[in-house]
Image (cartoon, rainbow, N blue to C red; front, side):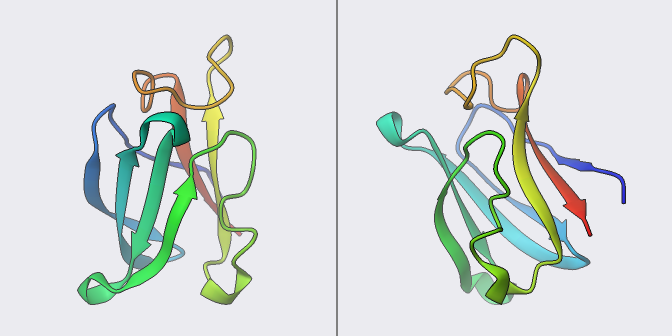
Amino acid sequence: MDPVEIPLTQDNQYFQATLDGINYTLRVIWRDTAGWIMDIMGSGGVPVLSGVPLVTGANLLAQYPQLGINGTLMVVTDVGAPDDPTKTNLGTYSHLIFVQE
């Protein structure tokens, strides 16, 4: 499947995203020295996954096969950007990508 970018901004945010055909609510919050942290909630705001750091180059879902989300969720950066998303480059030089398997 083709990669789909989940649009992000440099602000704390709370929004809907579809992963593997299921609608989730994602919350992305800047936590100073910890960087950007993501929570995923299912229907009714029930937590599915909490406290995932947005780090570059790793499948953020790989450790959680029990969630049943069939795909890869990862942060990628543009050439020349810092390795991990900074407070000011999330969504511009650092991108959250989902690829359904």
